[in-house]
Every structure is written in structure tokens, then in C-alpha cells.
Image (cartoon, rainbow, N blue to C red; front, side):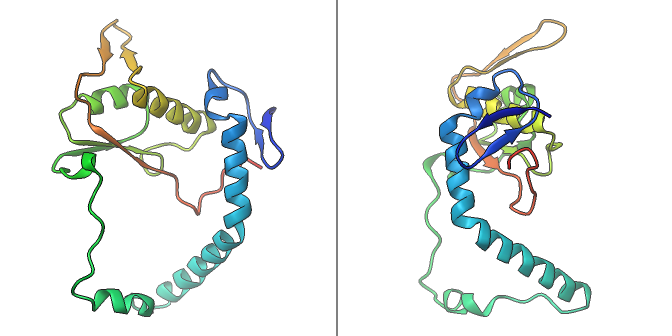
Length: 178
């Protein structure tokens, strides 16, 4: 592997790909470094607790609600915040990998929401993760298109679906960022 980029906190390992520099900017890498500095210890603690709880559950301990949330559960006036305007109607939602063809078809489908799934719907190769980010950039900037091998072209309609993103889980380590 070769080094693509380095900042004061983060080094990116891997083979540089087309347009990767649009995602892996110094500002983005610095942000990732600051997030890691702020939350690495807490993430480690949570993952340790997850392993401990998993062992208890495998041993037969039943699931139950956290005692810490009892006041909220018992408060009849507590309500979750209202959804963002683009998420008030989610009767039809498409979930799929953040691949270019999927994005164009999902955004044009007539569904209210497309969830770009970086977890279960995406094989977590380095190229897929970075290309998925590029797909989102292009979709948000409304410059995404797709041409099939037979030459058929797809472009965004005037009213695309609202985009949601399901990121990879906190328990999954990205070996290309150190």
C-alpha cells in the first residue's frame, strides 16, 4: 500500500484512486483526527462494554431497558424532536449501496427517501467506501449521472428523493486510516 495523504493526526494508506482527493481533503482528515482525539477513549469503553454485554446475553441474561432512561419512559410529556422537512413523509424509502447507478435510480424512483447504506449494503473495500462518498457529493451537488454499458443515460429528475446516510458502525475499524 502507498500513502495517499497525511495530516498532523491522520495518515491515509491505500492506493490513490480517481477523485479520492475530493473526499480525503486535509480539512476532512483533520476533522477525522479531531473526532478520534475527542472520542477514541469513549469508543474503546463502549466497545468493551458491548463485548461484556454480548457475553452476558449469550449466557442467558435477558434484554431489558436501561435504568438510566426510566424517567424518559415514564414522562408522558416527553416527545422526540420533529423530523427535518425532507423526512416528514417516509412511506416509501429505498435502501441500497452508495453506488452511482443505484443512487440515480433510487433518487429518481419516486420514493420519498433514499438511504445510502455504507454498512450492510456495501462491501467495505477501500474503493467502495471512497467511491460511495464521491457518489454522495455528486448527488448532493446534482451533478450525478450514469450511463449503462449499452449507452442508456440516466440523470436526476427535478424532484429527487431526500438522501439519508447509514454510516459504517462504530465497531468497524477502518484499516486505511491510521
